[in-house]
Length: 172
Image 1: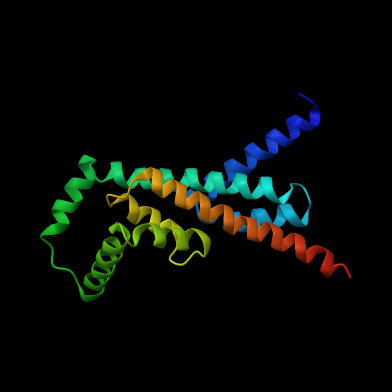
Image 2 (image 1 turned 90 degrees about the horizontal axis):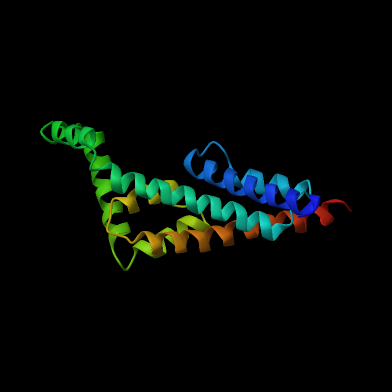
Protein backbone atom coordinates (compact mmCIF):
# COMPACT_ATOMS: atom_id res chain seq x y z
CA UNK A 1 0.00 0.00 0.00
CA UNK A 2 1.31 3.45 -0.89
CA UNK A 3 1.73 6.32 1.52
CA UNK A 4 -1.32 8.03 0.04
CA UNK A 5 -3.37 4.85 0.51
CA UNK A 6 -2.35 4.62 4.16
CA UNK A 7 -3.14 8.28 4.71
CA UNK A 8 -6.60 7.84 3.16
CA UNK A 9 -7.25 4.75 5.30
CA UNK A 10 -6.18 6.51 8.51
CA UNK A 11 -8.26 9.55 7.62
CA UNK A 12 -11.32 7.36 7.05
CA UNK A 13 -10.76 5.50 10.35
CA UNK A 14 -10.41 8.82 12.17
CA UNK A 15 -13.62 10.05 10.55
CA UNK A 16 -15.53 6.94 11.60
CA UNK A 17 -14.03 7.17 15.09
CA UNK A 18 -15.06 10.78 15.45
CA UNK A 19 -18.54 9.81 14.26
CA UNK A 20 -18.82 7.22 17.05
CA UNK A 21 -17.54 9.73 19.61
CA UNK A 22 -19.94 12.45 18.47
CA UNK A 23 -22.88 10.03 18.57
CA UNK A 24 -22.26 9.19 22.20
CA UNK A 25 -20.92 12.53 23.45
CA UNK A 26 -22.97 15.31 21.80
CA UNK A 27 -20.40 18.02 22.62
CA UNK A 28 -18.19 16.53 19.89
CA UNK A 29 -20.07 18.01 16.93
CA UNK A 30 -20.11 15.91 13.75
CA UNK A 31 -21.41 18.78 11.61
CA UNK A 32 -18.45 20.92 12.68
CA UNK A 33 -16.10 18.07 11.73
CA UNK A 34 -17.67 17.77 8.26
CA UNK A 35 -17.68 21.55 7.80
CA UNK A 36 -14.02 21.87 8.82
CA UNK A 37 -12.93 18.98 6.62
CA UNK A 38 -14.59 20.60 3.61
CA UNK A 39 -13.32 24.10 4.27
CA UNK A 40 -9.78 22.77 4.67
CA UNK A 41 -10.21 20.48 1.63
CA UNK A 42 -8.61 17.62 3.60
CA UNK A 43 -11.19 14.97 2.59
CA UNK A 44 -13.51 14.62 -0.39
CA UNK A 45 -17.21 15.10 0.43
CA UNK A 46 -18.33 11.51 -0.21
CA UNK A 47 -15.82 9.73 2.08
CA UNK A 48 -16.33 12.23 4.90
CA UNK A 49 -20.13 11.94 4.67
CA UNK A 50 -20.01 8.13 4.55
CA UNK A 51 -17.40 7.85 7.31
CA UNK A 52 -19.07 10.21 9.77
CA UNK A 53 -22.49 8.67 9.01
CA UNK A 54 -21.17 5.15 9.63
CA UNK A 55 -19.57 6.24 12.89
CA UNK A 56 -22.73 8.02 14.01
CA UNK A 57 -24.77 4.92 13.21
CA UNK A 58 -22.43 2.70 15.23
CA UNK A 59 -22.65 5.11 18.17
CA UNK A 60 -26.45 5.35 18.05
CA UNK A 61 -26.72 1.55 17.89
CA UNK A 62 -24.52 1.40 21.01
CA UNK A 63 -26.93 3.79 22.76
CA UNK A 64 -29.85 1.69 21.51
CA UNK A 65 -28.31 -1.48 22.96
CA UNK A 66 -27.33 0.34 26.15
CA UNK A 67 -30.97 1.05 26.89
CA UNK A 68 -32.22 -2.32 25.68
CA UNK A 69 -29.75 -4.31 27.77
CA UNK A 70 -29.32 -1.78 30.59
CA UNK A 71 -32.93 -1.80 31.73
CA UNK A 72 -32.41 -5.36 32.97
CA UNK A 73 -29.42 -4.55 35.19
CA UNK A 74 -30.08 -5.19 38.90
CA UNK A 75 -29.33 -1.60 39.94
CA UNK A 76 -31.71 -0.17 37.37
CA UNK A 77 -34.51 -2.57 38.35
CA UNK A 78 -34.00 -1.70 42.03
CA UNK A 79 -34.13 2.05 41.32
CA UNK A 80 -37.34 1.67 39.28
CA UNK A 81 -38.92 -0.33 42.11
CA UNK A 82 -37.99 2.37 44.65
CA UNK A 83 -39.37 5.18 42.45
CA UNK A 84 -42.55 3.29 41.60
CA UNK A 85 -44.15 4.00 44.99
CA UNK A 86 -43.15 7.68 45.26
CA UNK A 87 -45.48 10.60 44.70
CA UNK A 88 -44.21 12.83 41.86
CA UNK A 89 -44.48 16.58 41.58
CA UNK A 90 -46.30 18.29 38.69
CA UNK A 91 -43.17 18.81 36.57
CA UNK A 92 -42.02 15.21 36.85
CA UNK A 93 -45.55 13.99 36.21
CA UNK A 94 -45.75 16.11 33.03
CA UNK A 95 -42.30 14.92 31.92
CA UNK A 96 -43.25 11.29 32.51
CA UNK A 97 -46.41 11.73 30.41
CA UNK A 98 -44.46 13.35 27.57
CA UNK A 99 -41.88 10.55 27.62
CA UNK A 100 -44.62 7.92 27.64
CA UNK A 101 -46.24 9.57 24.60
CA UNK A 102 -42.91 9.73 22.73
CA UNK A 103 -42.13 6.15 23.70
CA UNK A 104 -45.50 5.04 22.36
CA UNK A 105 -44.95 6.90 19.06
CA UNK A 106 -41.42 5.59 18.52
CA UNK A 107 -42.56 2.09 19.44
CA UNK A 108 -45.35 2.00 16.84
CA UNK A 109 -44.66 0.19 13.58
CA UNK A 110 -46.31 3.01 11.64
CA UNK A 111 -44.43 5.95 13.17
CA UNK A 112 -41.21 4.56 14.66
CA UNK A 113 -39.06 4.42 11.55
CA UNK A 114 -40.32 7.70 9.99
CA UNK A 115 -39.64 9.53 13.28
CA UNK A 116 -36.18 7.97 13.37
CA UNK A 117 -35.48 9.01 9.77
CA UNK A 118 -36.60 12.61 10.35
CA UNK A 119 -34.48 12.75 13.50
CA UNK A 120 -31.47 11.41 11.56
CA UNK A 121 -31.82 13.94 8.74
CA UNK A 122 -33.22 17.06 10.41
CA UNK A 123 -32.29 16.57 14.05
CA UNK A 124 -35.80 17.26 15.38
CA UNK A 125 -36.52 15.36 17.58
CA UNK A 126 -32.88 14.87 18.59
CA UNK A 127 -31.54 11.56 17.33
CA UNK A 128 -29.83 11.00 20.68
CA UNK A 129 -33.23 10.93 22.41
CA UNK A 130 -34.81 8.85 19.66
CA UNK A 131 -32.02 6.26 19.95
CA UNK A 132 -32.62 5.99 23.68
CA UNK A 133 -36.40 5.76 23.22
CA UNK A 134 -36.09 3.21 20.40
CA UNK A 135 -33.93 1.01 22.61
CA UNK A 136 -36.78 0.85 25.11
CA UNK A 137 -39.24 -0.32 22.43
CA UNK A 138 -39.58 -3.48 20.36
CA UNK A 139 -38.02 -1.82 17.28
CA UNK A 140 -35.59 -4.09 15.49
CA UNK A 141 -32.00 -2.95 15.70
CA UNK A 142 -31.33 -3.74 12.02
CA UNK A 143 -34.14 -1.46 10.82
CA UNK A 144 -33.06 1.21 13.29
CA UNK A 145 -29.47 1.06 12.00
CA UNK A 146 -30.47 1.11 8.31
CA UNK A 147 -32.76 4.12 8.78
CA UNK A 148 -30.19 6.02 10.87
CA UNK A 149 -27.43 5.31 8.32
CA UNK A 150 -29.59 6.47 5.38
CA UNK A 151 -30.64 9.62 7.21
CA UNK A 152 -27.14 10.45 8.38
CA UNK A 153 -25.61 9.92 4.92
CA UNK A 154 -28.19 12.34 3.54
CA UNK A 155 -27.59 14.89 6.31
CA UNK A 156 -23.80 14.85 6.16
CA UNK A 157 -23.80 14.67 2.37
CA UNK A 158 -25.85 17.85 2.28
CA UNK A 159 -23.51 19.52 4.78
CA UNK A 160 -20.38 18.42 2.92
CA UNK A 161 -21.61 19.43 -0.53
CA UNK A 162 -23.15 22.61 0.84
CA UNK A 163 -19.81 23.75 2.21
CA UNK A 164 -18.10 22.80 -1.04
CA UNK A 165 -20.62 24.86 -2.98
CA UNK A 166 -20.13 27.89 -0.73
CA UNK A 167 -16.35 27.87 -1.03
CA UNK A 168 -16.02 28.99 -4.70
CA UNK A 169 -18.91 31.45 -4.35
CA UNK A 170 -17.40 33.12 -1.27
CA UNK A 171 -13.99 33.48 -2.96
CA UNK A 172 -15.34 35.89 -5.61
